[in-house]
Image (cartoon, rainbow, N blue to C red; front, side, top):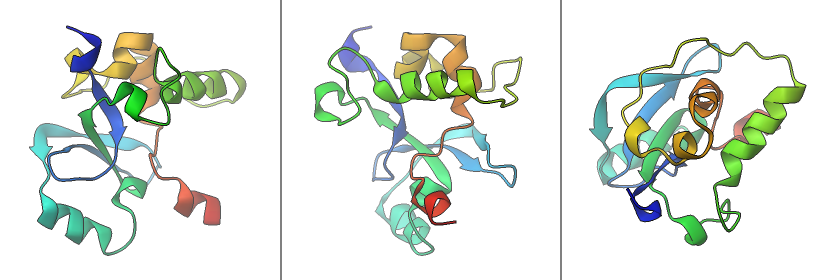
Length: 132
Protein backbone atom coordinates (compact mmCIF):
# COMPACT_ATOMS: atom_id res chain seq x y z
CA UNK A 1 0.00 0.00 0.00
CA UNK A 2 1.42 3.39 -0.93
CA UNK A 3 1.40 6.51 1.21
CA UNK A 4 -1.38 7.81 -1.02
CA UNK A 5 -3.68 4.95 0.03
CA UNK A 6 -3.85 5.86 3.73
CA UNK A 7 -6.98 6.91 5.59
CA UNK A 8 -7.16 9.87 7.96
CA UNK A 9 -9.01 8.84 11.15
CA UNK A 10 -9.71 12.44 12.16
CA UNK A 11 -11.30 13.97 9.07
CA UNK A 12 -13.99 16.59 8.73
CA UNK A 13 -17.63 15.67 8.23
CA UNK A 14 -18.14 15.84 4.49
CA UNK A 15 -20.05 13.87 1.89
CA UNK A 16 -18.15 10.65 1.22
CA UNK A 17 -16.48 10.55 4.66
CA UNK A 18 -16.92 7.47 6.85
CA UNK A 19 -18.47 7.83 10.31
CA UNK A 20 -15.99 6.09 12.61
CA UNK A 21 -17.60 6.63 15.97
CA UNK A 22 -19.66 8.75 18.32
CA UNK A 23 -18.46 10.44 21.49
CA UNK A 24 -19.89 8.74 24.56
CA UNK A 25 -20.86 10.24 27.91
CA UNK A 26 -17.38 9.36 29.20
CA UNK A 27 -15.79 11.52 26.48
CA UNK A 28 -14.37 8.54 24.58
CA UNK A 29 -15.24 7.82 20.98
CA UNK A 30 -17.32 4.66 20.65
CA UNK A 31 -16.58 2.94 17.32
CA UNK A 32 -19.33 2.16 14.86
CA UNK A 33 -19.96 -1.55 14.34
CA UNK A 34 -20.28 -1.14 10.58
CA UNK A 35 -18.92 1.40 8.14
CA UNK A 36 -21.27 4.25 7.32
CA UNK A 37 -20.49 6.65 4.51
CA UNK A 38 -22.14 10.01 5.11
CA UNK A 39 -23.91 12.20 2.56
CA UNK A 40 -24.73 15.91 2.48
CA UNK A 41 -28.08 15.39 4.24
CA UNK A 42 -26.31 13.65 7.13
CA UNK A 43 -23.71 16.43 7.35
CA UNK A 44 -26.41 19.13 7.28
CA UNK A 45 -28.49 17.42 10.00
CA UNK A 46 -25.47 16.62 12.16
CA UNK A 47 -24.35 20.27 11.92
CA UNK A 48 -27.56 21.72 13.39
CA UNK A 49 -26.50 21.44 17.07
CA UNK A 50 -22.90 22.44 16.27
CA UNK A 51 -19.81 20.99 14.62
CA UNK A 52 -20.30 17.25 14.08
CA UNK A 53 -16.57 16.74 14.70
CA UNK A 54 -17.13 17.74 18.34
CA UNK A 55 -19.43 14.71 18.83
CA UNK A 56 -18.41 12.26 16.11
CA UNK A 57 -15.25 11.05 14.39
CA UNK A 58 -14.96 10.72 10.64
CA UNK A 59 -12.42 9.18 8.28
CA UNK A 60 -11.48 10.01 4.73
CA UNK A 61 -8.48 9.86 2.43
CA UNK A 62 -5.28 11.17 4.06
CA UNK A 63 -4.35 14.35 2.22
CA UNK A 64 -0.67 14.29 3.31
CA UNK A 65 0.85 17.63 2.23
CA UNK A 66 -2.65 19.05 1.64
CA UNK A 67 -3.33 18.92 5.40
CA UNK A 68 -2.05 21.41 7.97
CA UNK A 69 -1.32 18.50 10.35
CA UNK A 70 1.18 16.93 7.93
CA UNK A 71 4.76 17.34 9.18
CA UNK A 72 6.34 16.61 5.82
CA UNK A 73 6.73 12.90 6.50
CA UNK A 74 3.86 11.93 8.81
CA UNK A 75 0.67 13.01 10.55
CA UNK A 76 1.45 15.21 13.53
CA UNK A 77 -1.88 14.61 15.26
CA UNK A 78 -1.16 11.13 16.58
CA UNK A 79 2.42 12.06 17.46
CA UNK A 80 1.08 14.94 19.59
CA UNK A 81 -1.61 12.75 21.17
CA UNK A 82 0.89 10.03 22.10
CA UNK A 83 3.35 12.59 23.50
CA UNK A 84 0.56 14.11 25.60
CA UNK A 85 -0.52 10.71 26.92
CA UNK A 86 3.02 10.10 28.18
CA UNK A 87 2.70 13.06 30.58
CA UNK A 88 -0.92 12.70 31.75
CA UNK A 89 -2.53 9.88 33.67
CA UNK A 90 -5.22 8.54 31.35
CA UNK A 91 -6.52 5.00 31.33
CA UNK A 92 -5.78 3.41 27.98
CA UNK A 93 -7.42 0.12 27.09
CA UNK A 94 -5.31 -3.05 26.86
CA UNK A 95 -7.18 -4.54 23.92
CA UNK A 96 -7.49 -3.10 20.45
CA UNK A 97 -10.90 -1.55 19.82
CA UNK A 98 -12.84 -2.63 16.75
CA UNK A 99 -11.92 -0.47 13.76
CA UNK A 100 -13.28 -0.29 10.25
CA UNK A 101 -10.18 1.42 8.82
CA UNK A 102 -7.21 -0.15 10.63
CA UNK A 103 -5.75 -1.76 7.45
CA UNK A 104 -5.45 1.68 5.82
CA UNK A 105 -5.24 3.95 8.89
CA UNK A 106 -2.46 6.57 8.75
CA UNK A 107 -2.10 6.58 12.54
CA UNK A 108 -1.85 2.79 12.80
CA UNK A 109 0.69 2.76 9.96
CA UNK A 110 2.82 5.32 11.81
CA UNK A 111 2.48 4.25 15.42
CA UNK A 112 0.99 0.76 15.50
CA UNK A 113 -1.17 -0.43 18.35
CA UNK A 114 -0.36 2.56 20.55
CA UNK A 115 -2.28 4.73 18.06
CA UNK A 116 -5.28 2.40 18.34
CA UNK A 117 -5.24 2.61 22.14
CA UNK A 118 -5.19 6.43 21.98
CA UNK A 119 -7.68 6.78 19.13
CA UNK A 120 -10.82 6.70 21.27
CA UNK A 121 -9.52 9.72 23.19
CA UNK A 122 -9.26 12.00 20.15
CA UNK A 123 -12.00 14.56 19.48
CA UNK A 124 -11.36 16.30 16.16
CA UNK A 125 -13.10 19.60 16.99
CA UNK A 126 -12.32 20.61 20.54
CA UNK A 127 -13.81 24.12 20.33
CA UNK A 128 -16.78 23.16 22.52
CA UNK A 129 -14.48 21.69 25.18
CA UNK A 130 -12.30 24.81 25.11
CA UNK A 131 -15.38 26.98 25.74
CA UNK A 132 -16.36 25.01 28.86
